[in-house]
Length: 322
Image (cartoon, rainbow, N blue to C red; front, side, top):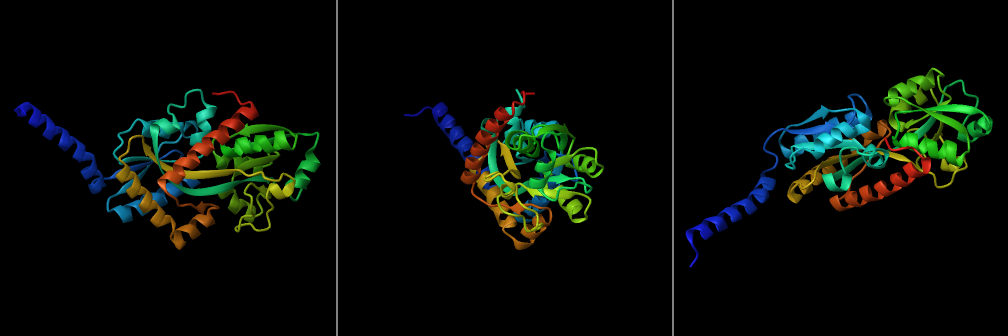
């Protein structure tokens, strides 16, 4: 016959086991925070706010944006990694998350250990741009004109995909004497390029789009495998003499590790529902982004591939861990 102590212990264990399930079914019951890893006004912030609105509408509770920029996204990532895995603190970040894994000796987190992947939400190619006074009309002509010359290229910071992709193309594949000039964001890198302070820039497509259309920047090539509908006359890097070259900046949402699977599934479903809508996709396209949808497993697999890809490129470029 079971003692009272055994019965009480059994009941306690049963209640404890049931709590996560019930909690996940009721989620969300209070305001949740989307911690954006970059400062307000940039594409990551814009997409984060679109996510907040979509989740608020679909899940019946407020999702608010909290910007924690700095250290290439590491400040926000470290903060979320140390938060409770209850679905009320979520990370909105970019491909910098996987790049930083190899770029920093200790970024303050390990992607596969410290996060639950929720959804890949948007992706954008990078673009090579030059001052409007540049004689070359495209990347092929630019490389021809600058062989044997010292040039500088602006980026949004060390370790960003435009920085690494620019290093790979300009110094590695094209063999140019190119020195990178890192800025604290795409906006100052673009401003420096428009002002002629650097020879060209490698930046994300979204913040450069309006300036290219206005003639304030000269587009040289886009890093997607296919041309971008927003600028159909702009050739790809692959078309410019470097077959197979591609580089993207993506935006995704993650939660702390050990998030209950039911909450992860609910968040993923709500995001997929929102980003399948034609108006959302059209709005993202105006920013130069393509909306993405997919399952939890698909995003997990993509993260693992990206970690391997960027670790290899960081090693090839010889950038010392910071």
